[in-house]
Image (cartoon, rainbow, N blue to C red; front, side, top):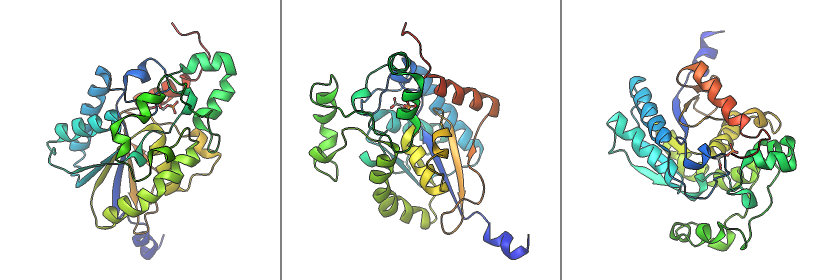
Length: 267
Ligand SMILES: O=C(O)[C@H](O)COP(=O)(O)O
């Protein structure tokens, strides 16, 4: 490689994406999505460990983005606390929320795989443009979600908030926020942490890395593992994403998330 090309490929910005620590419903293998479940004990530990790891790596954050869901906010707090960087501003938006799983919310993935087949569950979970069945007012969590005060603070009227989303629809609602609010901060040279969700982080990866519609089905993120992106001045990756931490443990955690969609009677 010529020195010029080498310079062109140099990393200018570092960004960390983080799927929140384990939540209570991750443990129970239920689609959690927009239900505001808190972190489990293990999730609290994962977030603290993540903070310690990022501190060891020398990270100094200038700004943190979270969704409106407690598990992403608590994860950000615990990470910053473990790093001794509690003062760093935290900005929240519904546009970073987990994918809206519609009528699947609250259901057990393994039982859904028994009823509908593992392939259907895999398509619901990982395909790019398949929207799960819509939630309606008869759903047990409908009121809890849409009557929550936090959704009266959004930049769209409550009636226009999603009733179910494919990953593509997550990206469609996330991208305006990414372009108007996150990108300008990255371009100012700020080191940013996005404490989001499995599927909001997948949507960002799809966009930033230009992952194809087919290949994004093979991207699964474990809870509490920071994903480091190194970007050039055009915010294009200069190297593959790095999942930080013990690689064997990370691979095992990815497999565990994937296996949540295997058919099994709930115990
Ligand atoms: O919404 C949820 O329950 C999860 O955080 C993401 O679920 P998934 O791994 O089935 O997409």
